Image (cartoon, rainbow, N blue to C red; front, side):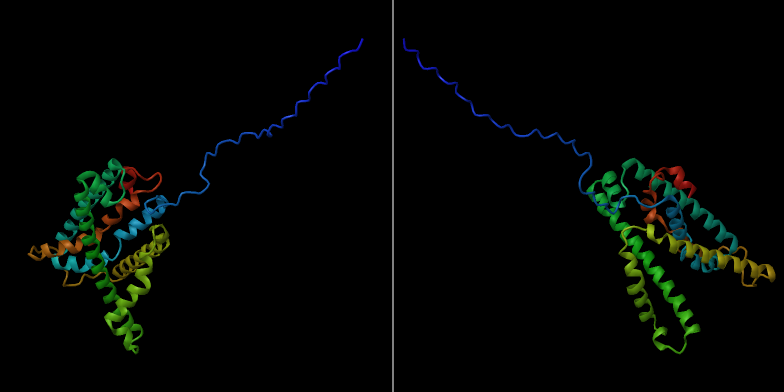
Length: 262
């Protein structure tokens, strides 16, 4: 009897599965670091204190002697103390406004408090304020440098021209400093400026102690209408409000008690 042919088992081709790739953990940090914007805080508390001190004890000291001579000694001291108290209070108001609105420019604070129109108005006021301050600074720079050049280099006629001296200082010195995005890099210049002021005050004190005589033109107290004209000049002595939000926006510094102590 013939046996039926046996069927060979069909071979199923092996299916190759793709290799198992282990799951990579999710990246928690961006591949590219975010660029620090201009309003980011990167200055230390010490640098801010030094810059603000130099901002207050700046060129405003040059006008103090003339201002006190115009309104006599005792009224001048009283006016200075009053303006100092007003300046301190206004800076506290500015820092509290920064803290409440979490904004650190005058335009942003104005927009947050008064709306978009208010922000533009506040920015325009600060523009006029800073431009007026710069004009007074350049007047003082012209007077001081011309006197220095006429004493040290009287034979160089080009250095006796106010337009050339002030224009050169503006273009080669002031303009490059205006390109800085933050004021933190000016802390070393501020230290030199403060030391210069302290040396000047020390020289005057030693000179007065060695020859304790008062100039006969110095008046103790004489009330005149000239007092009103010296108030703006004395206000310049405490002229640092346009930089208060920038100085205030510093790590571990954004609290009014710290700002008051500085």
